[in-house]
Length: 156
Image 1 (cartoon, rainbow, N blue to C red):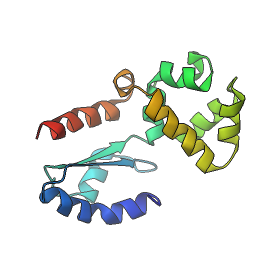
Image 2: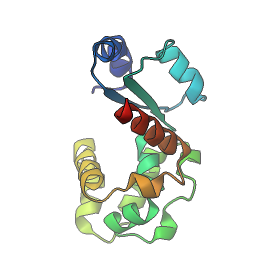
Image 3: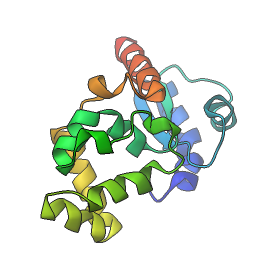
């Protein structure tokens, strides 16, 4: 969506849509910020019932690596190369790229060595075909909170 700043500017419009009955999930990376609750408060001071704004601690790539067996299998690397506490890593996007550079699968190495678009296409395919948020929630507390909030949104 052209970065977090563009997303932040669109949040008021998303809130309006949610107030008019749309159920929306908005995912934003924490990046260099230090406190997810403070960021949520700054971005949306007044909660909107049908708008689920969630913060991936550091970046969404931490959530992907939280499914250690899924990402290791997709990358073709040993599970031991995947961090056990992905949200503690200050640069999960770069960590994922470094792990992918050591993949046995040539197409994985090529995707991550190429343009950001190639890496993003690989990640999108992984999410659609192999990623299990249920497996990942135990190692990524922010993912667990997002899944709980999403379930509540679905029931509303």
